[in-house]
Amino acid sequence: MSAVLLVAASAGAVADVRIEQAWLRAVPPVSPSMAGYFVLVNDTDEPVVLTGARAEFAGMAMLHDTSTDGEGRRSMSHLKEVTIPAGESLAFTPGGRHLMLMKMDPVPEAGETPKVCLAFQNHADLCGAFQVRHNEP
Ligand SMILES: [Cu+2]
Figure: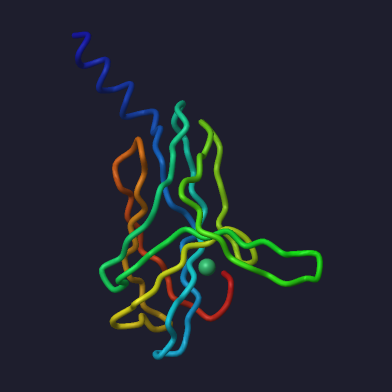
C-alpha cells in the first residue's frame, strides 16, 4: 500500500531540470560557429551544475559568457561551469551567456531543429530540439 502511495505522489509533482525556449541563430553554411540560446529551469530542490554541451553536428561545443569592456568592445570567455540554484532558472540570451557550436558538419539551416545536449556535474545529460532561426523568438 505505501508503495502505491509513493508512486502516485511522485507522478503528481514534476520536479525536474528542463530546457525551454531553445534556439540557434541561423548562420551562412560556411560559418565557423553558431550561437545557441535557451532557458534552463531547475525545478528540483538541489542546485545543478551545468558543465558543457555537445551536439552530433558540431565537433566542438562550449558555454560562453559575453563581457563588454570600458570602450564598448565585446569579448567572449569560456564558462567552465554554471550553477543553477534550486528552484531557479537561468537564461542564456543574445549579448550574454550563450552556447557556442564550432566545427559543424553540416551547418544546420533555418527551420531545422537539431538536437543539442547539455551536460551536468550532478545530473544526467539533458537533450533538446533547438530551433534554427534568424531572429530571437
Ligand atoms: Cu561565444
